Amino acid sequence: MTPPASPSLRPRVMGVVNVTPDSFSDGGRHATAEAAIAHGRRLLADGADILDIGGESTRPGATRPLVSEELSRVVPVITALAAEGAVVSVDTMRSEVAEAALAVGATILNDVSGGLADPRILDVAAASGATYVAMHWRAHSDHMTDFATYDGPGGVVAAVHDELSARVDAMLAAGIDAGRIVLDPGLGFAKQGRHNWQLLADLDALHRLGFPLLVGASRKSFLGTLLPDAEGRPRPVDGREHATTAITVLLAQAGVWGLRVHDVRSCLDALTVVHVLREEKQR
Ligand code: PMM
Image (cartoon, rainbow, N blue to C red):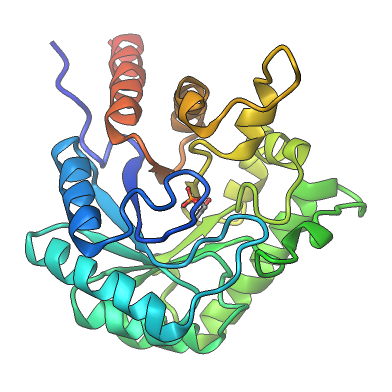
């Protein structure tokens, strides 16, 4: 029997640990350090390769926490889980939080703003040698929906390609090693539902930038609107897992570097199926 694939043969699975009262998918469920640490341990037991620990909700309309609040949410959780051997990514746009997270054991910076919100984070990434995930982003969550228009030639795919390419230039200029850069199309961030599908349908265009891709589709609202009930109401967050798994299969086939998900076990199950079939085809 083919064993489950190792991360070198399949996308890395990044399990989400939101230490926030208000994230759209799991807000409030792991808002204390103890609950977040316990959740991180569960994701590790399920096989997560990376834990992505964040203290700022980026749901549309969210207001930002104070820096001190964000620090007090994530630092104890990162400290505990990194000490237990987890590979930890910190989901932050702030250089101060990035520095504090690296100091207590994080090795990946996941910046949903790609350095636009706080450009000094690029210097922190360069100086530390951490892996730097730069997501496509246009504005903070309280007004990002105002920026969800992509009327230029090539639409959303060309815009995301070009805007990420400009961020790569900024990263390289700051001294970040090209081998440490990961890009992310930023599904749901200043995007309408159809923009997310267009990006998923043409990930090759983003792969042509020459960097590994991380994608976060898990439980996002475009899946809820895809699956309305008889009254047209979007499917609630807890009912979006099967659609998330279908996207996992497609992303694995598209050759992405990583998947940012809430349910690590179902994601790894899907990746194991893809791997077994790939092995069988090569026999
Ligand atoms: N999505 C969210 C938060 N952080 N980071 C990256 N790199 N990519 C994403 O798509 C992404 C992210 C928002 O989703 P959540 O509320 O489920 O954490």
